[in-house]
Length: 181
Image 1 (cartoon, rainbow, N blue to C red):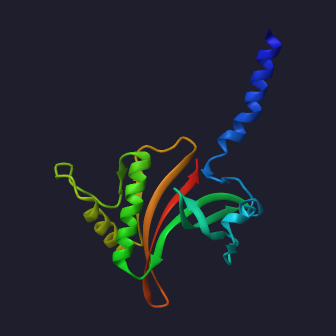
Image 2: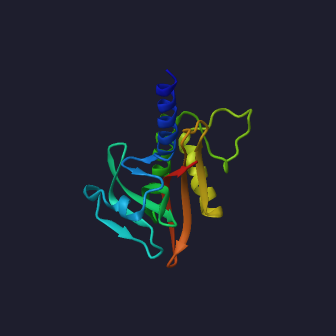
Image 3: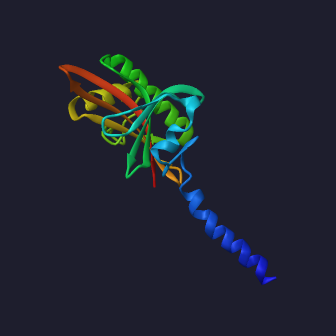
């Protein structure tokens, strides 16, 4: 009677670390090597950044094709970023931020934008106004985050709009980031 219980406990101890690190954005999982990430050839080709990180323009998120970027430390996947757009058009960036906001809210429940402050006694602020405020804050500070209040147990999910100047042009980018806990 004790032997089967011991086997079950031993199996659980062996499998538990595997499931704890299996978080990510399927089919990619945190802890994968660059070669493992790029092995999903149907979702490639993969491009290597000058720092060694990877991206593909054929990544899938919620059934739609997106640019997906992969960040590594010591050849292990530590962040997955799903791009909702990058360019000079502020209005497109605001619309992309709104999409990311709506997705995070639908998938995880209530979300917060820590950098945009609203009085507790104020009426609810429309999402479009929050998106405009987020873009304005990103213009000034470089980024504005969207953080779901309820986070998955195995990873941290957040979104952000970024704004920066490159080659004399103001650029905006919107992403949803997945990070291991």
